[in-house]
Image (tube, rainbow, N blue to C red; front, top):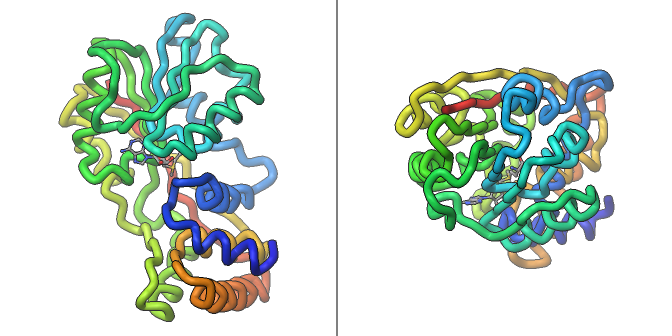
Length: 274
Ligand SMILES: C[S@@+](CC[C@H](N)C(=O)[O-])C[C@H]1O[C@@H](n2cnc3c(N)ncnc32)[C@H](O)[C@@H]1O
């Protein structure tokens, strides 16, 4: 990735208007051990367990993003399931629709805000809210909506991260924020919906809540990927600032991996609520 690409990335005004920032964040997770189980395949094995669900289940996802779960588990999705995949961002809906088309999988893909879902009570058997409830200003409102649109006994799967997730990269983001105090730099170390408090939030609307942890470790040895992740968390509105902050990011990323891979702790997991 050259400097011009990074400059374009830091000038993307919103985190999810277009997929570029999300793709840069997701790409960092490709630096796990070669034999590591994909996160979403793990999620389906421990939390979704499709065999235990109706073969004609009605399934909703809110905050679908770039639909990466559906790509990862394509061969696990029962053919009789009807999929309704939604996101608040039109750019993400377009991206997700393209992924489902590529997979040759029929799905109703559309815009919806998780706090005001345009579906009747009890319309779904299973719902997903993965790595998105911490973006909703009042996660409890989205959780109540998800409970409403699930049938009695229906199940919500909500993946999220825990305290200390990507701590070594977050430390670099703090350095960046200190060096550039006038810029927006997202330093997401304390999420509003995280492994530590998610069960409490979910119990506001659901009776039973189980938590599953998926710890892991990344060994990031690629300057471009690290620089791209740091840039994906940084917002600069003018060209001169973008060029200067990108130069800072590249230099810092080079130093971070100069003596070997940056070892990064992951703390991800999921809740199942019903
Ligand atoms: C970190 S991405 C996660 C995407 C996907 N679920 C995944 O795990 O890869 C968060 C997504 O939630 C969406 N989002 C944020 N707030 C939302 C809301 N109130 N309702 C619906 N989607 C929302 C964003 O547009 C973005 O696509």
